Image (tube, rainbow, N blue to C red; front, side):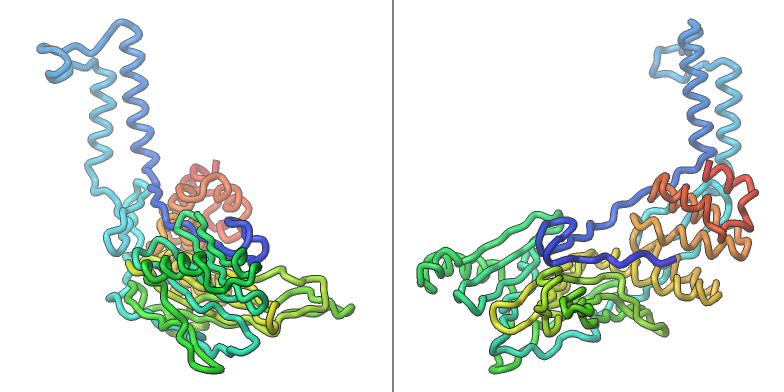
Length: 414
């Protein structure tokens, strides 16, 4: 059960309104042991009741000394100490990620991503034709990593337009259209724009005559051993009336070593859909790793002769990106019945992005199909990350039929 692709529509972005999608950086959620929560709440409730009944905890030397608790509270505290005496379960996560447990004795396997290494890509860079095509001439992150985006010069007015986005979805746009409409192509707006690009060291697409390529993709990331980025384009579609149904799509994903590529992210445009005007194609104008190595940025460019181009950007954390690649690949293995292979990749996806609920959910499905007790930990983790939606999904999922009557499952999905 892989997730639907993140689709970035150049004309109707779900986050920014026109050209970009920012996938938020992972947040960490902890699955708290139910037994511990029950014990603590019982102690608190009983102490409050004793307090309200006038049997307040007393001390020989005030509240700073040791408490002389009544028998009921002492019994609950003793039970809690006994319950906590066994070793706490640990869900091993690589690179110092926090553990997530369910209070049982089982543990999830540690995810081994190998040593960090150079980021590699198939499908980038590509040859970019110049001439009537108007690709972006600046693509990438600013030197401090805050902004990612592009600048291009249109083939009509000759105006320069820039669009950048930060990790929170805030936009920064710049344009010399106002000056260009007055016939001034070298005015103060362009000077200010170029000064900003130079100060922030936004990479340039080098001029190489009739063909060029995007800036070189370089840098180091933690998933170098397992994943190679893959980028490909799919053709658009024209209906029986010769009007465009879908413009070409840029698909972004990765290949886990030994497996086929998957493409969790898609860049699309609605421009000219419903008309006979179809873009010739779409290509990656730029792919970059942020200066701190924590994010990947992609700029897609559609070309259809002069006056007919479009752009879209994707900005995603490397952890979220890798988790989706691991998870989608694991889903393929699960569908083929390779449970051991699926469990390994779902475990890596779970560790890579500690906010991604689908990964531990799929891991729980894979464990449940073999009766593995670690399904309890994985499902509890998924619910902690995804909330009630995960509970409802698990209730109806046939992959949990083998464990549906077990007490831990009924407790988690109640």
